[in-house]
Image (cartoon, rainbow, N blue to C red; front, top):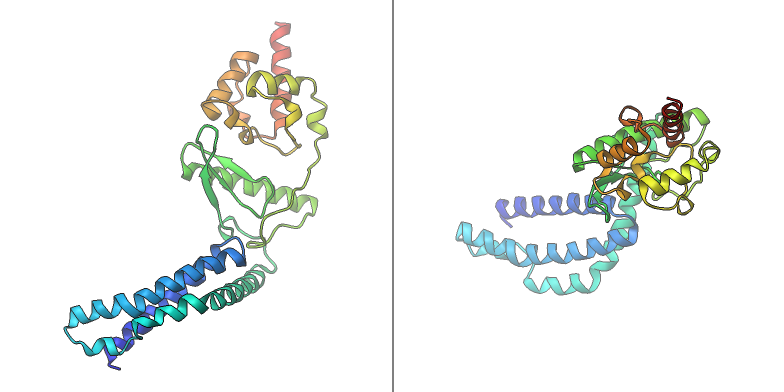
Length: 269
């Protein structure tokens, strides 16, 4: 085996290992990571046994380079057996990642950057959104994916501060999808029936179909309004004569309390 082929194989295997580990870490589960890796292993085998040797032979003009690589028939056992290695590797990488995350995060509050930020587009209105699966109902929207992520960062900091103040455990990065947790909603309930009216007149849906807690923000429902945040703010201004722009991101009980107060003030004058 000459030096060129040895270096090529080493770099190829290193790249395969790094990419495979990265794919596994970003997968939602060991099963999903194992399936992805199985597909990658088959791809690696085709590249390693067929494509790379042919490319090196073409570039160097030396046919002996092919002898330094496995035969093309080596793809067959990979297809038959590599699923075992894929799932074993996926489990091992997830275990190592979990241990490193726990060790690195011990004694400190996780940062926004420590979490895997998930982005996409809303089914209604096609607005960009971003979320963190380790936190229940922690999401944000924006006019662009970048703005959605920045809005999510603000919500994340607010949520973490509230959890620290109340003594709640902060989810560790990589701990998986959070289970539903119903926060107190006494502050929003005391605003009824005004909150029912607001949900119907502004959002065009029934309050009875929603769970709104003391910590909820209007951004979680702004997709109900065609045009998103700007249109929602304009509808409130036209309906109640109150501009909520300055305190839009405050908790909903605070926002609706100020709208109700502003409407009462308008009626008196």
